[in-house]
Image (cartoon, rainbow, N blue to C red; front, side):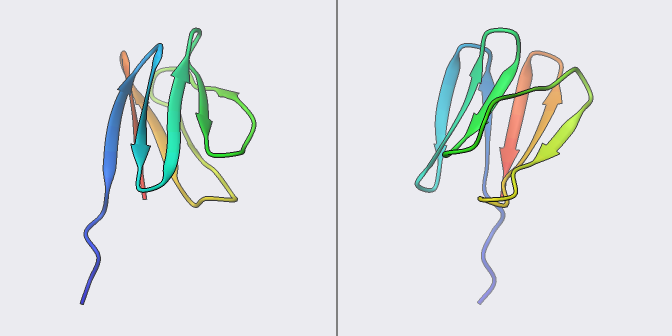
Length: 67
């Protein structure tokens, strides 16, 4: 059985849960995912968090977090 990819779209100033992990976007597009430190994402950039394996990609005013 294959597991469907999960994703959440988050705007600046909000957070969502991806499974049991909180993923948020703080003012200035600083992203947070679980217990890991903040990282600033510019438009078009992406980042993968080592501890959780969750990827974040900024597309305009949205940041898309996915497993």
